Image (tube, rainbow, N blue to C red; front, side, top):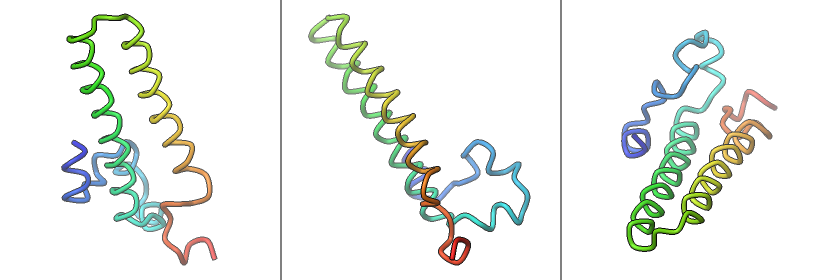
Length: 95
């Protein structure tokens, strides 16, 4: 999904984007929104795959907790970062 988001700018996959009104969708820069969401999904997926494979080699329960901690930090931190400072809005919207 991260590759689809980054390659095809599939902002329709973002929850709530399709249900927003047309004027609300016009406020957002689709390229920035797709790039940022795609990168966030890529980091979260890479984290889970990497620690999942590492757990097969070293079966320590701590690896699972670290993996989910990083996953949640990227998820929540990314959402907070994206929603503060109007980073995905078009430039003319917040002049």
